[in-house]
Length: 343
Image 1 (cartoon, rainbow, N blue to C red):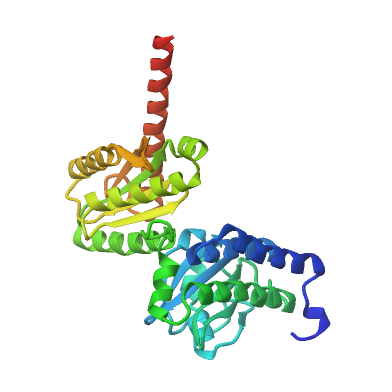
Image 2 (cartoon, helix red, strand yellow):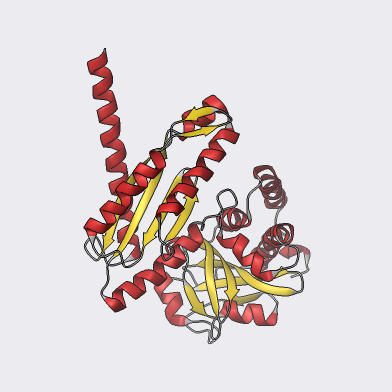
């Protein structure tokens, strides 16, 4: 792997340098860096997917994922018997050319994802290996030494982000990797992780579970008129208001941009979930000012309830998303009809 033939071509090396620059310019938080690197790594290598897994206790947890692995975000697998777990233990790059014949891998987990070959590189924080960066392909024998070198270089970007985010404490590292830097709420990866766990519990207990998708209305005009500092404060305030109405057992997350989500555990049925959504809408709409400027906060909220609207994670998320967009379209029609009447 040290030979000249294992080096990526100059264009790819320049893309890796540009990736480093882009991370610095965007000021991405640790969760954002991991998501960015997984997407960029897949593009650079032509792989079918890329994953950042963190070692948490006896499990490896998917904290960022792209391509064929995207739907597995938040997945938890046992460290024992997995290639990723071995990579953490042995602290070196490991490769699987065919998951159907390689005894190192969790074959059933690979089949579930449609994965035939992969390569994993350790992610180091200080002296500890805290996770892996993984390339995945639906084809056997998909990766060469060049891919391993690209993987190694890109894993260095995440390691650097870990160092700058948290210099010493590993516990703080996991918090930074799973929480939104602006609002302090759970990020997309932790939301998916919690949804998998609470959905599994709802299945076992035959209880109701609610998923709320909230999209902030009017954030762009705030940014355009008052600047991004005002827009950031509007997002923070929205996060605080959503959290103040939610129970301690619920999960409140900022999924990115102006999108938030809430997992309502053991919600008791659709009527209770709808009442909670109504209270959230009222709380978000309360008057708000930033530096003596009145800002209008509002949100379109969509709801999905387990098991009525779906029994798996993807169905519930899609249903909540569709419901949110239906609310947004209805509001737009109402505003347009009001403007027509006024004219």
